[in-house]
Length: 248
Image (cartoon, rainbow, N blue to C red; front, side):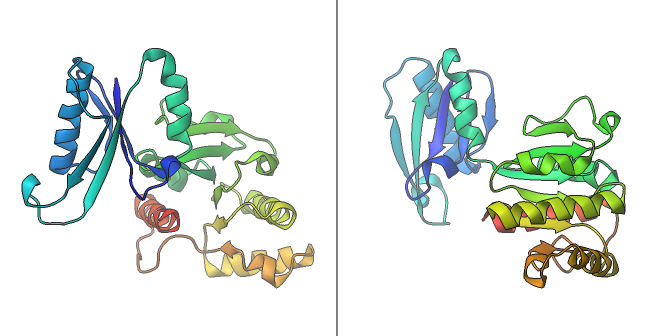
């Protein structure tokens, strides 16, 4: 297997990866003619032909393109024994997301996030709701009480709260705010629901001793503005788009 990685001004841990096998390709570096040439370059390396380990592509007429710019690719031959290292390296490039709730919206969101550059921990107090087959970037965790999973979340997690119960939602929000107060390492805490739901939660959380400044750290409703649909799939796309905005 050969791995192609974007280089140049992109930090190594945030780079885009593509693994090229003799008969398959996993991942993408953006598609188009550059990717086609990169796959050919990698397969030449697999065949034992002498090829550069770093290559510069000018995105112009020589590639039949008019978008401009330059892409730098680094190629690395990887043996089977190095696969654990490769998995760790790729995982470091994925933004951690903690999704609390396995209802209709949660399941629709997993369908979207499973194809995006996130490392998702999917948490629910009901163990039986998790599907058997999931994308490789989704890890399921049963936690009862559900808020008990908050202290162990990955540093920098983007937290999405959408359990089957408003009572559970409230406890997860409170646990996240306590962690933010103590560690400051959850940059985004998002709660699904209406403005009325969040107003009620604010009042109850204020009674528990949280300040307005702390409560302002919570995003509710979640998702990008301007999408009116309430279908689970529509909400999932809006939430995923908001996460991508934050990632970029």
